[in-house]
Image (tube, rainbow, N blue to C red; front, top):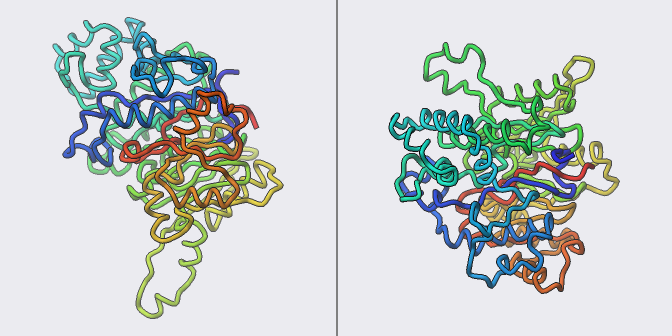
Length: 476
C-alpha cells in the first residue's frame, strides 16, 4: 500500500512538499496580504539557510539512501542543484516528493497540457495569444510558469502562488481516500486547480481513482446574488483537517473553512464508509489562528502542543461572571467542539467543553493511550509569549515518528515547555551535521523536537506541519 494515512504521529513514509520557488521572491509589499503572505521574504536565506535543512531532515528520516554520503547534499556544498526541482542534479526521491516534479510529469501528456493551459488561462484572464504562447513552451518552462507566473525570460504573466509551499492545504489523506481542498481565497485558486490535475492524472495516484473526495458548491449557489454567493461559499483548506486516529477525523471551522464545507466533507466520508467519527472544531475566524493546525498539533499518543488561551483557560474565564457584574466584560476566545458519529444510517452528536477534553479523549479512547495526557503550551503559557510564539507557529509541528517532530527555532519559551515535558531539543543545523559525520543515526533519535531555522519561513505564517502533505504513514 503506497497511499494511506490514519494518524498524525505514526512513522512518516512518504509526503509531498514544494520548495520555495522564484514566485516568492516577486511578492511585493502592496500585494503580500492579497497573496496571503504576512511579509516579503528574502528568498536566498529562506532556501539555503532554512528550507534546505528541512529537506535534508526529511531525506535522512524517510529516504536515507538519497542523502547519506551524497556530496551535493552536504551543508558545506555551495551548489544547490540537489535541492532545486527539475535541475539535472535534483534529489528525485520517491518518498520526499516534489509537487513541481509531479506536475511536470502530468504535463508530459499533450491532452492534459492543453486542458490545464486553457483552464489556467481562463481563471487568470489571459489572452488567447498568451494561451497559444504557453502551449509552445517546453514542459519544464511551462511547469515553472504555471506555478510562479514567470517565464524563463523573466516576464510575469500572472501572480505567483506563494502559499504552495504549504502543501498540507491542497489535500489530506483520510485513510485510503484523499480529501481535496476548496480554497477560501482567490489567490489560491490556481494551486488548487494544479493539484486536481496531479491527483486525478499522475500514475502515483492511480489507486486513488474513485477515492478522491471534492467539495462542491450547493446546486443552487449560482442563482444567488453575487454578494450572497461570496458569503455562502463552501470552502475548505487542509490545515483545518487532521486524521488523528484510524476512525476519527478533525475538521476546523475557521477563517478559511466554512461550516457548509465541513459538513459536506463529513457526510461524504460517512456515506463512503471511510470512517464514522468526525469532530468539528469552530475556532475564532481570525488571521491570528487561520487553521486548527496553527493552534494545536499532536506529538505522541499522549502529548499535544496547543495554545492555552483557546483551551481550558478560556473556558474558565468564560465561566467567571464577576467582571460582567462589575460592568466590565472580559474578552474570551471561544471554541465550539461538536463530535459526530455515524451508525446504522444515523448521525449522533456530543459536545466537548474545551480543547483539552477533546484531545485527552482522542489519546485515551481512540489511540488507547494508558499514559496521562500531557499538554505542552505555546510560550510555556507565559504572558505574552503564548500569543507571540503561536503567531510564529509554535503549535504547528510535523511528526516524523512518534515523539520526534520538526518545529521552529525561534519559539524559545515553547522549547522550554517541551524540555520540561521530558523532550530534548536540538537545532536542525547541529542534527544534520551529526548525521553527515555519522555521529548520530536518525533511528536513534527519540523524544526530540528538531528546531528548524525560521527567520524567513515564519514570515509566511506556516510551520512544518503546513509544509507537508503526508501520503503514507505506518498504520497505528
